[in-house]
Image (cartoon, rainbow, N blue to C red; front, side):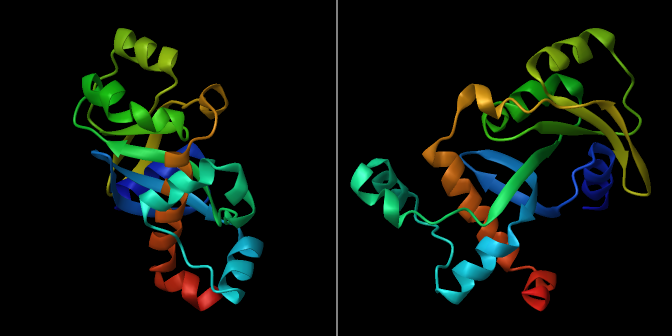
Length: 175
């Protein structure tokens, strides 16, 4: 986890790290920022995170648009630890449609220009990180979410991340 915190700091993602997120076969760590005003409103009105993905299908119906909760978190980015740069594109695949994605490589990885060129083309970020030292930003990720637009899956993921964030002790102390 320390390695992921160093990586988020190197990327300038100032938010809360949520490790071990697993959805649709993707395993990653998310960096989120709570939207305090929305969180407080949802807490006062008893609107807990909605974790049932089937419920979200109803959101595409225009008649239910006034029953959709405002997301209480912003997804700043996704971090995916990988052992080698050749796994980076596959690791960030679907995540690139939802938020900037960066792979976290062990700090002893050699720099390979052609591999980095490919990752740069697709907007995948690269951070070399070790648990005990600051991370090195090799390649900044791009935010390509505007190219893909919003999705019901992305909105559901925000609810999952909000739920995970509510489980953290420091949030309940500050709420």
